[in-house]
Length: 78
Picture (tube, rainbow, N blue to C red):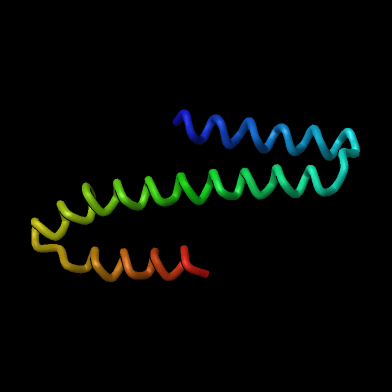
């Protein structure tokens, strides 16, 4: 939750920069930082998902979760 709150803060900061007609390069830099933060959040969430949800489903014999994971990975790699 802390990461998401920080990302929300970054997005509000970008919104403020747009409202104040900040220099485009500065806005682009902040957007890149927010994108990097979201990507980092995704990696952590995916890691947690694999270690918990996916592993538990496999232990329970639900191999369909592997196809679901592969579909998710394909979406993330677009």
